[in-house]
Image: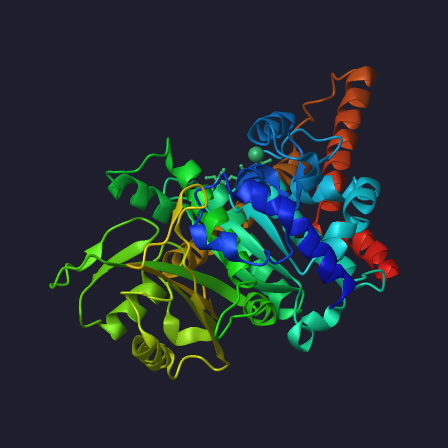
Length: 502
Ligand SMILES: Nc1nc2c(ncn2[C@@H]2O[C@H](COP(=O)(O)OP(=O)(O)OP(=O)(O)O)[C@@H](O)[C@H]2O)c(=O)[nH]1
Ligand SMILES: [Mg+2]
């Protein structure tokens, strides 16, 4: 066993202690350890989602421009082991007011800090896989995704890495994104930020820098929160963030569970590192002992099905892949690579060996024709169910996790992305027309003056003229600054620093 793996196993003892206080699925207590995933979270939304991941034991780097966001984050992390996270405050900025170019500028103007705190971060450098987490509506997160992806990808592939890169099948990407998409009350600016960032992510995926992208659709979170009569969370954001950290944590532990047939870390990374949208499903099956199938027991995250003597395999698979909050709204005809993990009791009243074979067949049927790569499959027998805080050995419960990378955006996100880009194009056209008109008007005015009129500024004093010319100079300075914030130019300096890493 490689030394770095032994190190990880030593570390897990501590991790399990914190996990024991959480209400994640109880079986994860039986995992040897969690995958060594790290998270880099720029901006406020990234910070709030990341806070839950730190609490689950994953090393996280927070990056922000706004002091109030950082103070709020410190509050969320109160009592958490400081070894588990790092907060980078980008100097010279206080929030980005939803401007992506300012978010980019904030990283650019803090290169020394980023180099010291992020490029030289041993834990990021040597982890198995990194996620960048950000909200798509603001400026800090969206403006920094591009550079951060390139930086992290470069450090994880550099010679300085002690962890061998051969863990990555076929040299695939080492970084994925998790992004929160604005809800339906969002204005054009956040929607445009989201659209431009999604295009940027797609571009980085095509370059082989980014793997899958998990989209947290805030509107789905709100809808489910409103529908749920029994929920105990104070608001949809708290609940949504918890769901995200929970499913990521559970999958990271599954990878290190002993199973007859396991979805092991390399297979898990094989899925995560595939460019496209990551659809995650989770379905809980409960055998209530009733003869009739009561259908779905609606739960916003864990879709539960009452089972009866005869299981409806196709329905289970259909529900597992399409109905969870992070899996809804996808065209599964465009799925590229997938996986399924079943967690069951060794004496399960939900599944027996035959069921397992039939489920696997149902999964193959469901995905047939769409997957052009492979589907990884894992079955885990465990006598620990319930939650980590309060575990039990319920034989009547089973959990199915599904992972699929789809070569498309979810429907709502795809439609809004197109609409936001079109609206912006029209706005730009209108602006260009208006400029032309103004120019035309000016020309006709000059022509008039040439003809006969006395210039209106003949009475202007020298100081007036100087002041006017100074004003003009200032304007030209401002427009030069605006041009300087063009993303391509801003990125070049940082990228040349990155090249020195290799
Ligand atoms: N899922 C989720 N979305 C959030 C959360 N906080 C904010 N958002 C969403 O994220 C978007 C705003 O992004 P922020 O992260 O606040 O922006 P920022 O990156 O800090 O950038 P600036 O505020 O412009 O400096 C909005 O669409 C919010 O609805 C959160 O905790 N969870
Ligand atoms: Mg903010």
